[in-house]
Length: 123
Image (cartoon, rainbow, N blue to C red; front, top):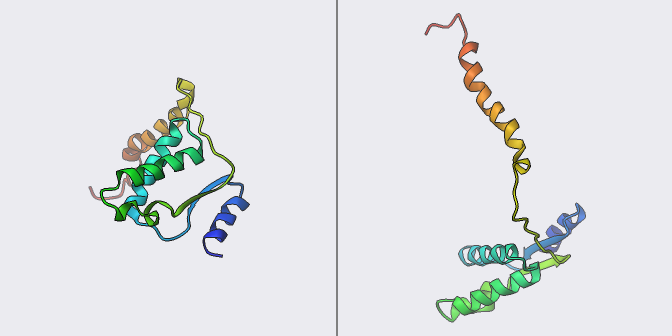
């Protein structure tokens, strides 16, 4: 099934929106375009708008005509539901409660480690 099987597998486990490739894409250009995609998505655009903006930027900002060709920007597609990222600007200490659990777990070996040395070892 190729790419479609990959997409179906994600959708089968409940992923609502999948961004996939139709063909093998240039890694460098694809990374730049997808960075712009996620930037646009974080700016309150929906997934379709974000992909379209990043594709248009690839065309308009390409250093030469060859890199503006559809091969470089047309290989990405969105499947599934429209995705919109809601950004909450207000963060509070309650958003970071997990840090209170992680810090002691990370620090514990530093305090307990020296006391667990083998008393029979030659140091």
